[in-house]
Amino acid sequence: MKKILFILCLISPFQAFSDVPQNQINEVQHLLNFIKNTSCTIRRNGTEHNGKDGVKHIQKKYDYYRNDIKSTEDFIQYSATKSTLSGNHYTVTCPGKKTLETQQWLLNELNQYRKNPSNTNEQSFTSCPKIRPQVCTMEYIPVCAKLNSSDIKTYASACSACADHKVISYKEGSCKNDNNR
Image 1 (cartoon, rainbow, N blue to C red):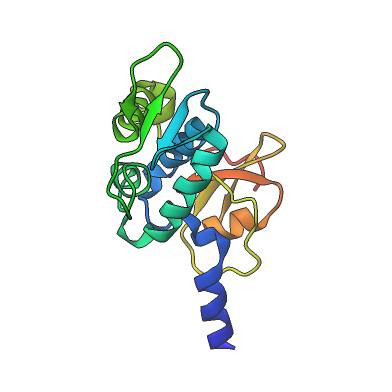
Image 2 (cartoon, one colour; image 1 turned 90 degrees about the vertical axis):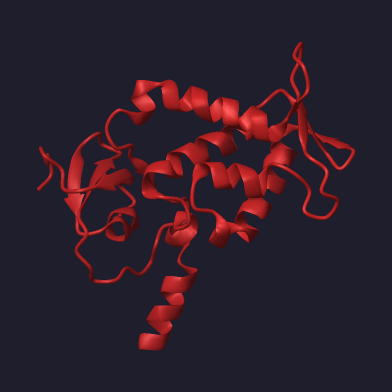
């Protein structure tokens, strides 16, 4: 039984962002959405890609280098800077603008994101993964969770919060004014 629980913990989708510090998960997610929704053209190894195709490749590299990534800047460096095989830098061309290397383009967007007080004000809430955890360990590391009813509720852990389909996001620590205790 212990072996099965250990294996489930290893493959749990909740571990998807364990590489990036908790306070930077939203930054990485913002950059992935920024790439996906861009009207710019991403050039990789001589081939042009739209944002949706570009983000698929960057996500694959992110998954591959996950153990080496310790910050949002590392995410950009390892996943969205250059080809591992050819060494050629990725570039991006936006309508009416000068072509940039994707690294600079994403660092510029990250700086803009960090300047917005609503993004960095208090500790940001982290969205629950699309695939919810099925098994959680019995640990007490309380989180404050936002429910789809707009209420907040304290859960024993992030895993137990996201296992509840009513939860949309969470942040570390107990809720100060828990509407649902």
